[in-house]
Length: 353
Ligand code: KG4
Ligand code: ZN
Image (cartoon, rainbow, N blue to C red; front, side, top):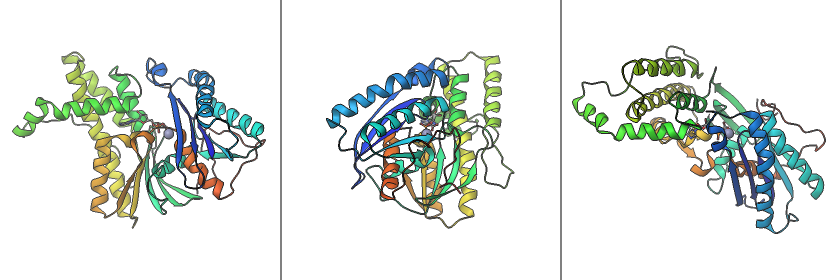
């Protein structure tokens, strides 16, 4: 078995994965969301301190599950990219365990970890596959060519998709993380009488007009800072004539979500036009968004591609995906030097072209 640790941001998570069939045996995560929520985003120092507190608790629970650690063959740990002060907590725990148990360490790139979330207790590993990664830190299209070759095809020039949801939620005093909350408000708006009636009449605008980012740009890049700013201005304009209530919030959330997804789809369409790829996936925390899943499914249908999705519980950061990636590394004999390996806030993995 491999014990894996994920602490790249604000989740303290540990998993145990069986090597021979990649089965996930144990997974636990202590999220710090409630502690960061009052600040409208992750506070790095607080995240670091909470990892120091939470990781040992989860490890104790994992030990109680296994009885003892004698069956562990390696420790897999996220070492990049992420918040340095958070990554270091996981790496220190991993190194200590490896030294004590005399087993090797496997360092995992978090983005590759998200890719392997597709293969936790489902699907066979499939290559080549193109992957839309939408998280709090990244918005990218990555081509997974083989287990050791990943190519970044497109990325965001500024904010990420998930981060933009977090910022808009903060503008609306909705707490953190913003993605799931905005999605709920958007759903409420689409189910509301105001929306369905205006659809019937067909004359009224049902959503606020927001600019489609990089509309005339022919490259496959993403950008969310302009949309974020346009949403902020729209909120200000609305507040000139009315106070912020749940109805207005729902209208803003639905309008913003629609524009953000339209931008992702616009660029994904452009990407499909350049490739013959038949396997496509969405991973990362924001891949849980139902409206995004539906929109990307439609694009995949148009281009006759199969869409792969991770189980909902493994979209957000978790150690199960790190363990699943760790199994591939273990089988390939890819171990790191325990005294040399270190964390990095940015991707340095040799697997990225
Ligand atoms: O992958 P993840 O857990 O952490 C990073 O690696 O960044 O992604 C977290 C991000 C947050 O920005 C969160 O707001 C967003 O994913 N997110 C969503 C949804 N659920 C989580 N964004 C849009 N819709 C959702 N349902
Ligand atoms: Zn992540």
